[in-house]
Length: 342
Image: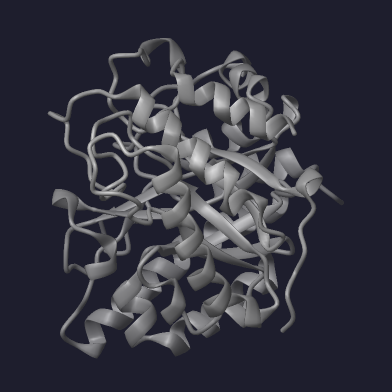
């Protein structure tokens, strides 16, 4: 007897406990412009949403969203908890399934991107353990987390699955674990695989040849100026393009920007990953940054596409005074819509 994809996904909700805490708690690839992944990183909503949340995404001519069911652990701890009742609705399995189904109904494709959040804002790339026993504990937890969502992704025919995000130390110290994990994911998921490396360590990832996209969270520094002009930003992007090509095109895999984006703030291009809430708003800086992105690296034939960081379900709360990453209701949105339509 064969269950429908949706029924199977919902069945997972009842067969697997609600709290998944691990304690008792080649050659160059050419990508045509028409086939590029034109995505946004969809912020998991705290509460259930309806279909109308996805209409504005189609409105900017996007064809993909990334769905991010987070897991949580304290810094330097092997404990990993996911699908907890204390998490936001969109971060749990229930919310991820509903989000994927509604995106599908709107004609959008999906990348499922399970992601670890370390408490107290610690960078995930610094997650490290002193003993082999601690590493083994965390890796067992992480494998359960990833395989749960890989099975879910397969049941819902999700197009792309991301096996990890910015886990620099783990990838560097434990490469065999990652090779084994990739094989386990391949056994249960039959779509395309990627890994989201940070912009400053993508060239040190040893397993690009084993997956389908070279994934980069593309927060490359572009300018230390308060309001950089388009020429300066494009010039710096051209430098980074040369470096990316020399580092990854030998694998014969297309490059996917698993995250890319800029805040609508002064100095947004200096260290694009930095969140400084007191920064003075500058929607023009954000607009110029996106313009440079699309006029340079987006045009490369090895660029598979990108997921712009980030997009909220309730976009009416994003205004011109907002200095966060979202381009919603700001001049940058028009730039994105224009290039995504081409």
